[in-house]
Image (cartoon, rainbow, N blue to C red):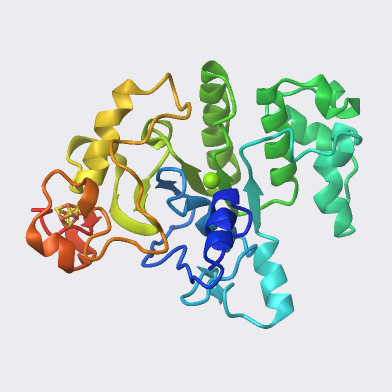
Length: 309
Ligand code: SF4
Ligand code: MG
C-alpha cells in the first residue's frame, strides 16, 4: 500500500522509484461496537495509513477491512460499499484545514446531509449545542473560532450523518494542552450519547489511556502489542511499549509532539531482518536478528516479541 500523502514517503520513493514498500503489514485487530480502539505509534509507523484504509480512502493490496460484514477492501457492489461508508466518518488533526473558510458553520455542518438530499432544517443548530457551542454560532465563519472550537465544529459535522464509526486521526494534537482535555471529554460523552465506535489514532499513549478500551502499539507498520490500557501501562510486554512509556514522563505536556525514543526508525523499504525492532532493543538476542516474532497471546495481551515472557 502506498500512502502518497506522506511527503517523507514520496522522498523515499523518488530516491528509489523501483522500490516496493509494504507500508502496513501484519496489522490485525477487531473493534467491537461502542468501544474505542486506539492505534499508537511514532510518526511513520503506519497509523494514518491504517486510518485511511478503515474509511475506504486507501485500499490494501492484500487483506480485509471488514465493517458490518462488508469487506471495504474487496467489495465491488457500489451500493453495499456506499451503505457502509455512510456509517463511517473521519476527524483529522488540523480542524482549520478541513473547514471551508468561505462557508458559514451552518452549511459546513449540514453539508454531508445536504449532499445526500437529507433534511437539514435546524440540524446544525442542534448539533452545535451538542458539541458545546451556541446556536448563534451557526451564522459565523470558521476564522471566528479558536482551534478547540473548530474541532468541535468538525465533530458536529461528523455527527450530522449519524455515523456508527468515527476514525479520529490525532484529533487533539494541534490543540493546547487544556483544550485537548476538553475535546477528549466531549468525545467520550458523545460516544455514550450516540452509541459511537471510535478508532483513535495518536502518537501519544497518555492521550488514549483514559478513553481507549484496547490499545494497539504500532512499530514500523506492524502491530507489536495489543492490550487493555491498564495492562499496557502496568505491565507492558513489548520492549518498544516499555520504551514509549519510559519516554512519556519526559513529554512536553499533554500530547505535544515528542522526541521519539532513542535510536533511529529503520528504513521502511529495507526493514531489519528478524524483529524489526532489534537494532533499538535493549534485550535483543541472536534469534531476534534472524526470526520474525509471531504475534501471540499472553493472558489478555497480544504481543510480537521472542522474549515477551
Ligand atoms: Fe527485542 Fe527480540 Fe523482542 Fe524484538 S523480539 S522486541 S528484538 S527481544
Ligand atoms: Mg499521521
